[in-house]
Image (cartoon, rainbow, N blue to C red; front, side, top):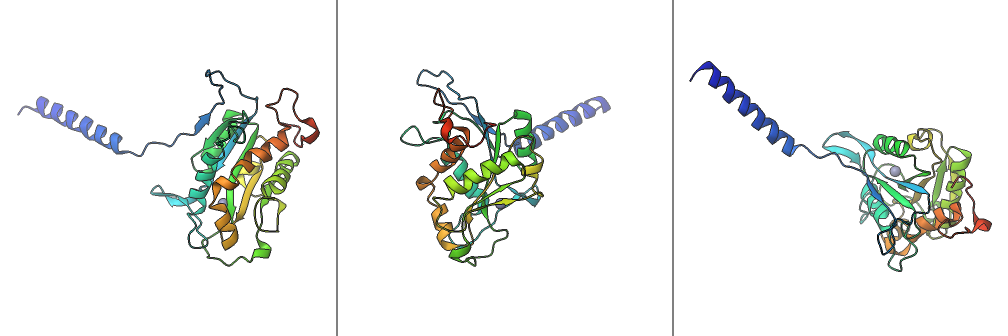
Length: 250
Ligand SMILES: [Zn+2]
């Protein structure tokens, strides 16, 4: 074997190894964008772009990118629940109550928190909506019924209006009585996003009644679109329902 052919073999082997490594590298998870269309395939967007940011509390390593908070036994974990809710809320069987049925253009953020913030900013979404269940950590059913409820977190005055919509139109479905809005200045999804942001803490996964309610998506998933529509004044209607519009930026 000459030196030249040895080098060539080495080069070929390097390329093969590189191809194998590339083939087995985990693919970067891309966001998914849903565009409302009529039965002819024509876009019927109402002009409002909604970013649903799935929960992914940053993990410690690439093999564990998201720490999921588990609460009461039987809970799927906050991140899995959030991913389920984000997809359940797009289309409703009756064809009118889902976010896309309501003609919002929806982007679902599937990455880590910082990726979702960057993608929402570069996409120029009109509203940024992190979808979370409450309580940090994975303590089991320690939260009493009286403390359970839906929280809307906000930092800006516009975001506060969306937080109020979470409280009033999502929280009215959740079982706990403690529905409220909470000012938070230390959440990246609120203060690093350049559009109004309303952060949903749907209920407590550390309260059994709240957890069991959250696991039945089909009974309340329409409330995401309901809260956004209440904020936006029902833009799918030509005239809009301005009497109930709460969030003038939408
Ligand atoms: Zn969370």
